Image (cartoon, rainbow, N blue to C red; front, top):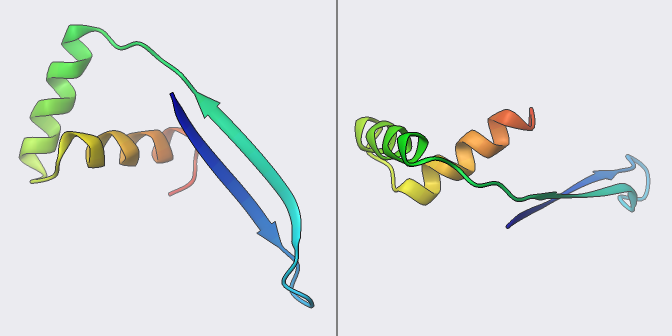
Length: 62
């Protein structure tokens, strides 16, 4: 389970205007896990770093 909190702040008082909690739970296949490992190795990142990057990209947060 991955939980991501996205907050939008107002310009004037810097108080949160909107908060969205996105809970993402998924099961990936062994093939997808192998592809994730290979891509992490190519980009010289840990598997968890690569996973976080891909989740952010999938949510359009990059």
